[in-house]
Length: 461
Image (cartoon, rainbow, N blue to C red; front, side, top):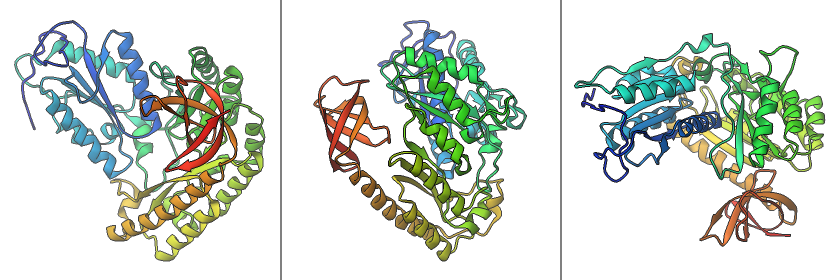
């Protein structure tokens, strides 16, 4: 373990040009975020808290006083990337405070301890984590290195939802609002229930207040996110569910578009679709996690639905919304997956006609039931990923081509090409490019004229 000495003396500010200059009393802080939208949301909340306390946010590649790495452990690749970023932070400034939080730190704190860090925390109290960061930076290590401060809580004992500020920093057109944490599905391949603990939900009154604040702040779209938002309300009194939350938020922010995060397929019922379709500001974009189109594979995964139930949900959505964009996740090469099972999945995918797919080779998560199952060879997984990706690309092009000639209200976010073109998103979450100037945060009607690469190209009406 690297034990380079750190001598802070007091809370110092290193200029970005010279790490040895001490000019001010506040901290330059860099944050690197891995993983899902929940991690992104929690990082945004930390950013808001840090800037409110007078600290300055800098790019991760700059010389900072503090580096925070918000880690992910959903795959082996996520673990590896988390470790790489921790090591990079230490190389960027050997005298900086390196603080690690998130799912990888929660599940594998001992592995993080060996990476020369100053603070290890999990997925719990983010504001307490930031206070500890400030305390360590203020105290320093004196003349010698000390073991990292380990504050990983017991994820499985959590009972309260941590209410964090929604939104993001300036000039962000779309805000994220975390409404749920935790998961109790215990899919056989997934470590997240152990990292995040049981289901905890944001009360409806707090959700309404956050939505009102975001609309008042000028955000034009809110993404409702969580670890498993289909379980929203399970821990709340009154038998409330996700659709009740959506109706509450839609009423609180009637002029702001709403977008849903990932859904468990069983959420999509006739009542859900009927009530959701009545919300004028709900975007017709639904991410339904599939993972496999083969019932035998789904059973080994401990998923709680069949391919037939999944198909029923698609039909309900397509009956309730005009040409919705339905996207999904797919795990390829799950333990025991035969060629015939994979062929069933490919046939099912083509039948579903997804607008976009995220394809992952199965990754062993130690401690999960799937880790002890018979594994598919790496070469087979790679070959199947390529086949699934080719099909997914064909389906995506087919969906995009079907958008040509339609008119969509597009929320514009950023300029490209020296400001001569602007990029935004339609309600179906397809990227749209137009010629124009100064369109930031405007929602304008766009007629789609063509498909270029991964985006739609249109003209403002």
